[in-house]
Image 1 (tube, helix red, strand yellow):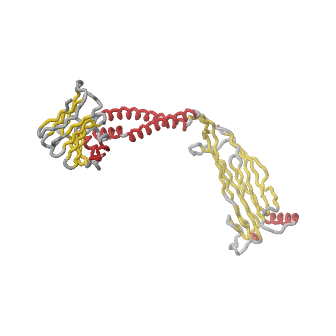
Image 2 (image 1 turned 45 degrees about the vertical axis):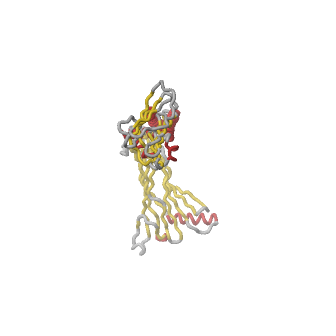
Length: 411
């Protein structure tokens, strides 16, 4: 507790530290008030979509290549998906496609299939040769089923499409290049749910191309798309709520801290240092000019003898050493200075040699003070401040009795 009190006294008596603390506390209060004002200007609620349902569309391509008997594939006439085949060995491709639309709740748990679901779909083959020409051929015309899934099977006649490509080349007079065949599956599901109506669009393409003797397969065999269905709900503005709570708490804390610092700083300024605190403070602040600081026995507060290194330090320390008695050794001369409660130099005692022919000089701002000085055998000096209204001024005392004796001011 003593250390906290000492710290408060140090901070309160330092103009820089005190001003810095005031600036920090007032700035904190100002920022908190500004944040609170900003939060009050935000709308109270926001419109946000609440997810009620998640739906996923998934399609998978698969195919079987039918080949002429050959030795390249060990005499096989059927092969499954692979990156490429020799085109001269391919008679046709048997393609299957599986589509499914699934429903899930926001937690990701599957929902039962809806009885009010329907699918429309078609399958087309798009022949293209670079950017020279494009031709769309119908593999499965537009159909509709009352379901949310479908399994499609159809043939991709490679040889027939080769002939189609040759005829188009002859028609547009273009040289032979890579011919690409893209199988494109298009779905338009419609599902009625408790949340609302689902009507997405789903397209999935898978391509084949050939040149000379090689058939190349490209594209992703699996495609999956997900989306959500929900409703708009009004929710409290999260940013407004957060800023309001934080700014209110910060403003309250800053006001409390301002009040605490105002009371604590006033207490610290008005509360005197104890002998121990003052001695420690003198050593801490003026260790470069102080030889020692010793409190006088049986003395009133603030009666401390401070031994300085040089008379030159009197000017620097007289106002800042917090009302002690200052002693400076300069050869055989001893110089004592008394600082009063208003931080002003009130009395000086110069004692040359072995404490003989001393002079006591006073210049008090208050006319009602009287000082008594007693020189002890241990060379310490006691000064006792008394208030006597009848004393109007203080005169110089030009003589000092030899030890032991007393020094008194008189008119």
